Length: 68
Image (cartoon, rainbow, N blue to C red; front, side, top):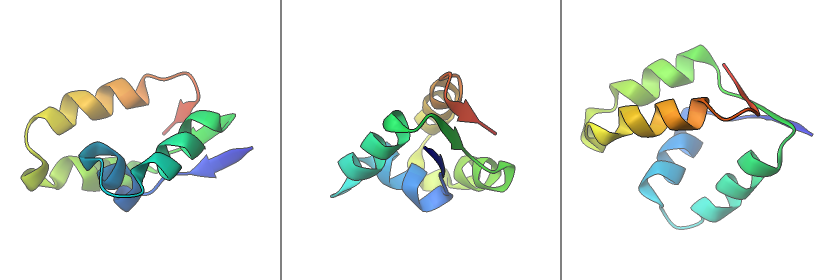
């Protein structure tokens, strides 16, 4: 199974908003998860998330099943 992860799902997982587990579970169960470049740029532009968002996103994108 492959999925596409968009910005709001990334934000929900990062902030651990209610229901984030469903998105996180789908992300890790997918054979491959695509994150569009536009969503990477948008996520890094959301300043209210703080500086830790950059390291978190880098770690997420380094997973073997994630493709940009």
